[in-house]
Length: 192
Image 1 (cartoon, one colour):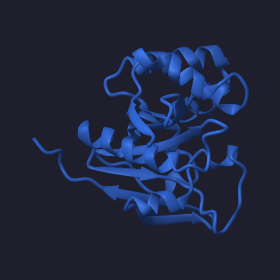
Image 2 (image 1 turned 180 degrees about the vertical axis):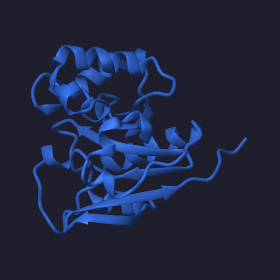
Image 3 (image 1 turned 90 degrees about the horizontal axis):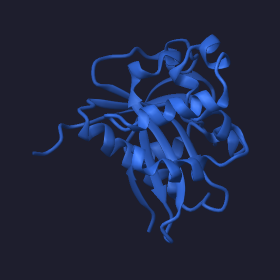
C-alpha cells in the first residue's frame, strides 16, 4: 500500500524525483500560486526550485510526498494556509470563496507516470488533510476538476479530480464554472 509523509528538506531528492526533469512540474516547482502573475514569470525554474527548497525547511511542510508499494517516490500534494498562496485571491475559481482564519488550500498534485490510476491521489489528499490538521487548520479547501463534466489530460488534473475530494468527505461550497467547483472539509481539532 502506498505511504505518505510530510515533505521536508531531508526528502528533497525524493521530491525532485517526483517532479522529474520534463513537463510542467519540473518548471513550476509548485510556485504558481505562491507568486502573483508578474512575480512567477520574473523567476526561472531554478529560482522556483530554490523557493520550494526553502519552503521544505518549514514549518509547516509545504505538502506531502507519496511512496509506492516498492518505497519509491511517486507523488506530491501541495497544501498550505490559503494566505500563503497570494495568487488564489485573483484565481477565478478560488475567488468564489473568501479566505478565513484557519483555512488551508490544496493547490497541486503531481503523480509520476507509472504510478497513476492506482489510487495515489486519494492517499496524498488524505495525508495532506492530516498535515493541515496537525498544524492547526480549521478547514481545507480544494479546486478540483469535475471529470463527469469535462475530461482532461493528466497535466490538466493538477488540482485533482472532484471524485477524490468527495470520497474523503469534502463538500461543494461553490461552482464558479461548470467543471470547476470549490470544495471544503471542516476539520476537528487534533487529538492530544
